[in-house]
Length: 117
Image (cartoon, rainbow, N blue to C red; front, side):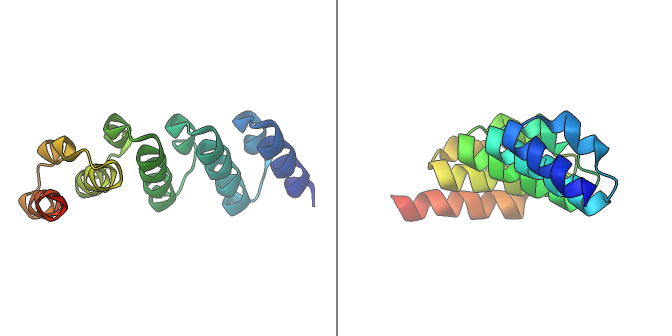
């Protein structure tokens, strides 16, 4: 179980470079994701080669840090907009709703602000 030892060492040391030595793709993705979320470093999410995991990783870090700019790392337009909405909701910074370009998602975000008033 060589990949587990690299994964465990990488997570413990929080060094994403060691994740690349893991040959099992899901385990390697898990390693990058764990390090990214523990370090709150969305750039590490980009090493994951599963788009859904990348989006989830970036969104969780954006929510945790309250940094809407982090959502800009998401390439999918819809998911980027959803990220802005989730960060706005988590931080109650509804100015982030203005960055949403999809009307239906923006309306939901704006509605969250109205509910908080």
